[in-house]
Amino acid sequence: MKKAVILLSGGLDSATCLAYAKSQQFDCYALIFDYGQKHSVELESAKAIADYFGARYKIFKLDNQQFAGSALTDKKITIPDFNPTSMNIPPTYVPARNTIFLSIALAWAEIIGSMDIFIGVSSIDYSGYPDCRPEYIQAFQQLANLATKQGVEQSSMTIHTPLIQLSKAETIQLGIRLGTPYKMTISCYRANDLGQSCGKCDSCNYRIKGFHEAGIADPIDYVG
Amino acid sequence: MKKAVILLSGGLDSATCLAYAKSQQFDCYALIFDYGQKHSVELESAKAIADYFGARYKIFKLDNQQFAGSALTDKKITIPDFNPTSMNIPPTYVPARNTIFLSIALAWAEIIGSMDIFIGVSSIDYSGYPDCRPEYIQAFQQLANLATKQGVEQSSMTIHTPLIQLSKAETIQLGIRLGTPYKMTISCYRANDLGQSCGKCDSCNYRIKGFHEAGIADPIDYVG
Image 1 (cartoon, rainbow over the protein chains, first blue to last red):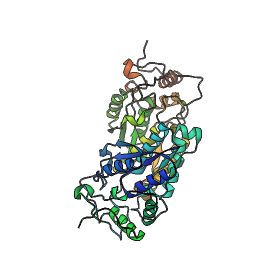
Image 2: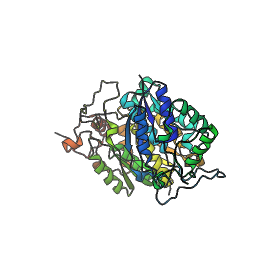
Image 3: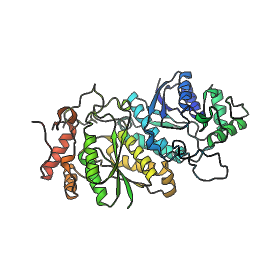
Image 4: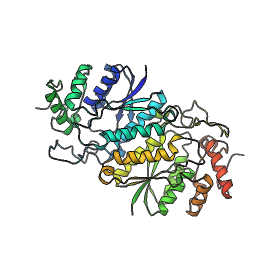
């Protein structure tokens, strides 16, 4: 079996991505980041989902002082409700987050001898983060092959993005077919404070819309 | 003054790079990594060099378990002497190191509002690490502009590599003109164990050769 590194957050997309990598017969190594996110309860979900799929996992702790200036990590900045009229990148954007995560995934891939990294980004139902777009992923793949000893010697590292052209509803339909345990996932940016999902932040908004459009009941609880 | 993030290791090249950025009138933010390197005494050099140039600095600690498998971080792997006949990337290669370092520099740059990152890589007198080559740096710059909010909005982030086409001797000549305090730098991979420089590892080899070719006395001490 070929090894793959899968970025796993505990949310809906990355859980589906892990299910997809498993379905493609990869030996899965889940990489989970503790980066000072306010919704750190997602880490427990991530571990449970990795166990559910029989994947090895590593929790990589990053100095969260690095990530000041985002509503997801900075106590001084409030997580906003979803704003359907805004065209701006929202304050939940974390500077260079996916680049840092993919870089560390690249190191782990090289150490374990894997040429395959999976990341559950989507450029359809998403918050406009620049590091979720296809052109960004293509640039990272090009970099990965120039950056590493194994890239230079074998030159075929692949960044897999099975969800990048899927709507949230299509992701959920794919995930259901693949047996993704959505009840174990947490999407809400406010989950730590509330103990359940708020139903109003960007992340909840896309999730609720996705289950609704897919015609599937969301198995998690929301406030109220 | 424009702000710049400078990767600073405590070695000869990055000290010269900081001197160069200062000479270009940048307000310098030095980024120092504690990644479990065996020659961690270089961290003290890096701090002293940042202070010497009046640069702000941040020490970013990275979980060194991530960096298993390199002679620079793994106690089970011996640091080799320089091998002039080898065409291979040496065991001191650290998987994806510059990609991780540059990614974190990118985050810091975005947080402080800087569009300029300096890294003291050279592709002339170097150990053959893939992430020191011009094509790698170009790929990272392209990525940086796709990855970040400020890259998308302003699209002009620059990865500066003032030493990339310089021999070690030329770097030293440049650094002397710019007032780089080479006595404060540490290059040796074995500096922690020996308390001074071994004169035999890859890094010492290139340094000694560089000072010799530049016709300048190296101000640091070597064993024996």
